[in-house]
Image (cartoon, rainbow, N blue to C red):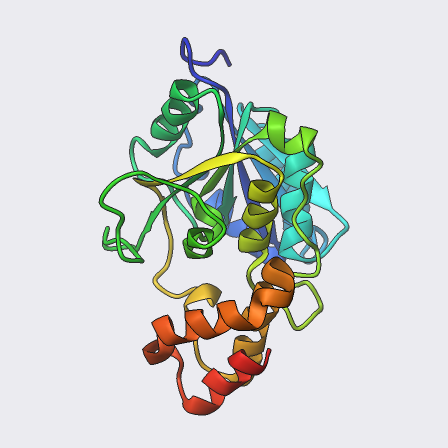
Length: 270
């Protein structure tokens, strides 16, 4: 499909796993998904043999215009994101999951942002809850993306210009995120953004609503020592020797969000 004049093409990369993929056909795609010029969807399926119904359902999805299906032998969310970096056909990649939808105007707004700024490589929008409210404190205006404020980002708020990302050899660290098989069960998007910024790529945080996500997510969990240590590992990965100071500053700012003093101490210890 031809893109709208002057706008880059966009691939929406939807990560899913096992029988959760059946929900895609029953959800937005099954409800009469309408292809949009210049936009394609890439469904990345881990555990594609988890259920006998999966194969026919994925074949039906792949037969629709503007939808590609990639069956993956890997596990872990970061590996799924890396497969999207390799396989996406658009100029811009929007990161998505099987429990995410996109509000009206989101895809067009992302494409306009990249069209209006040829030097822009990283775009972080805003996510809404199912009632249409911002899931985090909303930004009043667009601001420059930095290594510190990138910590606000959720993966389903991120869009990337693939040319500079691929040229820099950037990947999601497979040791971080859901399904990584390590204690670092979150933060893969923050690690990725920090490395992209360190490589000289330019980015913005924008108030544009780009996703609708259930109210709960792993990044919003502040209870349990394991979760605290996982969050601490992200800071160690990004900030190296200065991580203890950054963790202390972060803890002081967010001390009321930690479930207990023991959880806070686990975060500070790293």
